[in-house]
Length: 225
Image (cartoon, rainbow, N blue to C red; front, side, top):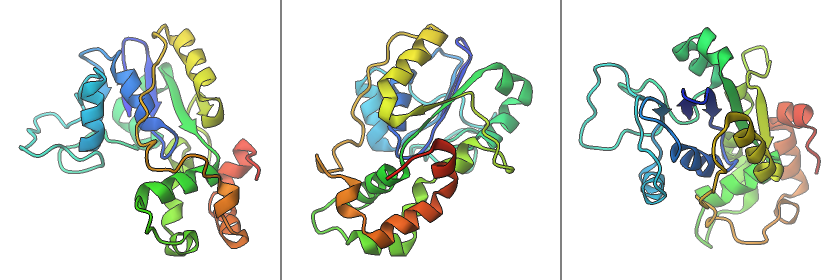
């Protein structure tokens, strides 16, 4: 999650949507007063190699972190964190700032997100079958709807960039904000075997489970099989 005060931009970080790559790209253009949340150690190393600004202003006032890296998620002393819902961001920033800035997030077909999550969580060739992954309920962890909507289901962001039109959406964003063109690193792209399609892996039972769990996203974005 990033808050870029100079350009008036809030990036609400969603799951399995190339959010890490976009966040790293945006952090290259962040100012010393912007809010940048922490990533995993692997992704922070990539951010450093890419010339991105390190996490800053994401801890509560007066909190001094220890020797270990601050985890990406919520925790002691953490005020802003990775995958922080828009409702919490608005609460911490204040409604005036939140609604004055441009709020943006990314979204992707639930079928694609579930497959991406499957290969990210199970990276070896001896991975569990997709049916077992569905049965564990783990596949629901890529549900983004609660991250950019309020408790009544109202969308809280100004712009949702769809993954299938990612570059065009980012180009429109940079044109609107005055940011330079964003060059994306390929964070986490190595986990999914090239050419692997969800139609080849999701069984009818798995497909039904995904459609039920992600019903709100299917309805709002009109994703189809």
